Image (tube, rainbow, N blue to C red; front, side):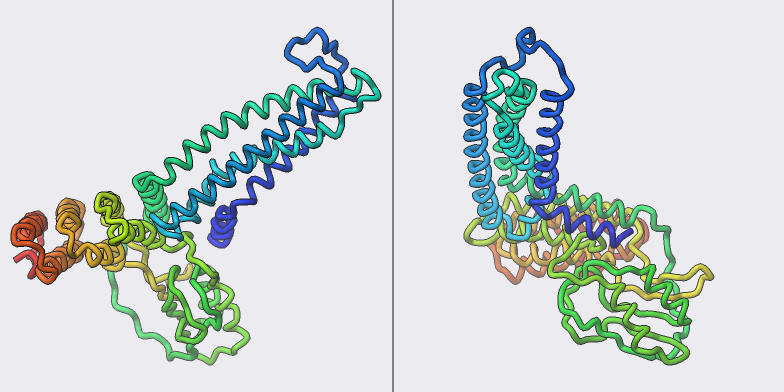
Length: 442
């Protein structure tokens, strides 16, 4: 299923697939309307005020006007799309363009425009002036008028949509929503797992390299577990989704009681999907990296927008609170008989916290407002900590904030403000039950 979902994620990023499907619907609708006009309906059109009642020449002119207008609207939409993508790439980061391209609402609007154009072309070609009123598809022309009006309202919605897409807070909220959804899907149903020492492993029989460069998009652990059970082996996977791999390296270590042939190892390579870009299917840090990129752009000298960076820090605090309230993914995967089969490389709390705050803290070293907000968020996370290990992770980041503020050398008043917030956050951590403190807390 994860392979299927990974394929869906990659297809969703394609801007043309949904518009192409909707355009096909435009052709089908045109065929249906012409069938109703010429083959099935026997209506007195002159008695229905809402149907077109002109001659064939007027109908051709009307549909030609609709078609010309739709061509103009579609050209405008394409121009607005390129402008929006350029702004998003410059202000928020080029990798966030994929989020814009994968927006279902934007794809649906583009599909509506294209479907209307195709519909108008088919209906316009069907008008037969030699047959008089019988050659004018009045019902089809009425539907063409409705589609054109719908496109006008869709244009207003599209302008509103892309205008909001250039606002940093809107993009931050969207990425944060995707991050929270990914965390709930990956971590919600995981039971608490107590750390246990590893049992004695068989000898290492093979060091497997995947022989393909690129980003790990997903790892089919069910295939790895089945292979390990079939060969009575234990696999140590030293890569995870989001890692970039070179062709050579010790990517998977095979521990087995007997030698493993090379042909059998090829099945392990097929279980790890590698692509040209990262995928959020298994990568918990995917959306975190996107949010961090927005913050780093905002803190760059060319943009200098600390308010956007602060908004990102707030959302990252919410994400880290969600992580603290759940169990991280287990690194040990067992078969149905309870035997250890796979030792997986997983994102742990320390790695996720580092991904959230390290680069933002470093980029905002000379900005006391950013350091203060990081300290405040870390302090507010204290009640969400369920164990000492989580509190130590937060304390380490508070220590780094304090050390970085000292090294960056802001003004004395600014440094005192940062130090006061760090001290307040450390006090909140000390108040947590069972926490003894660290050098940062002291």
